[in-house]
Length: 126
Image (cartoon, rainbow, N blue to C red; front, side, top):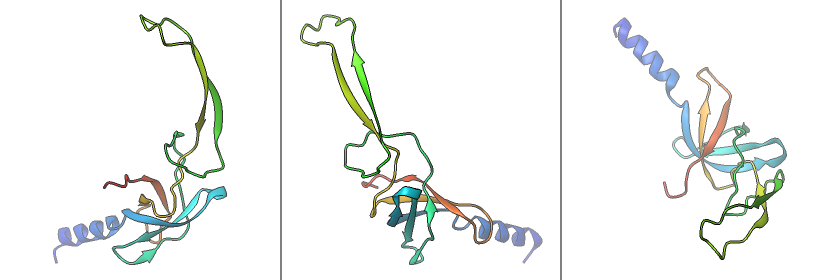
């Protein structure tokens, strides 16, 4: 093997497994940690932190106990809409936390036995 091929092989080995897709099997809501199962090598991860992301207003029931409630109000020109009235409503926003069974994207740092973290969920239709 040439020196260039050896370097390429080392780089390939270092990058192998940095970005992975898996399924959440367990979670610790209070610590924002999950365990992920990887089908490709039939192994489970250790506890992985979930990256703190922008709040979402989910259409489905995420049971994260951390949520923010605030009031929204609209007043202004109706631009010809006679039936549209001033209104006020409550909006609940929750930080993203995957459920057990959700498919997620995991990134590992590029060193031996490195820490990893969940950077987000993958839509179910993938």
